[in-house]
Image 1 (cartoon, helix red, strand yellow):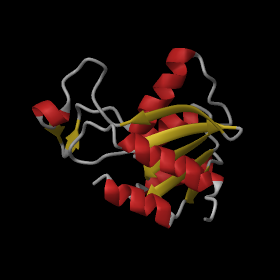
Image 2 (image 1 turned 180 degrees about the vertical axis):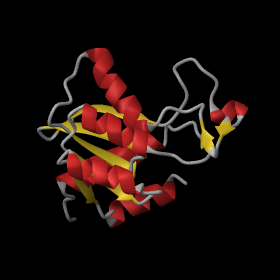
Image 3 (image 1 turned 60 degrees about the vertical axis):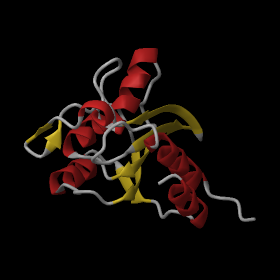
Length: 153
């Protein structure tokens, strides 16, 4: 059996987190890592104790579900809540971050964004990552992760 790389391992964690998502439009997971250690994880869903899309339906305005908090934001907010620094950390996200999450990741000091799937990759987000010297890299899924995702669909 071939051992998966660190990038594949952390991306697999993000796919596992995405299984907790409560939004029916897209399931996303994010894992924040520093020094090869997971410091936080998040998935897209409503505020704690709030109505969930899976129960009440998506609350869509301008083609965006405003009921949910994005996975990246949830992971960063978990760090803030528990006083965990994100400076020079990395994040593994199942989908390319939206423009707002891009800005939050830059402000939080994230230095590398790894993602598995392209999703409405906004040109300004790409430009901002470049300006902030944030490395962005697509991680190819291994057969093990693909098989895992198939089992859980």
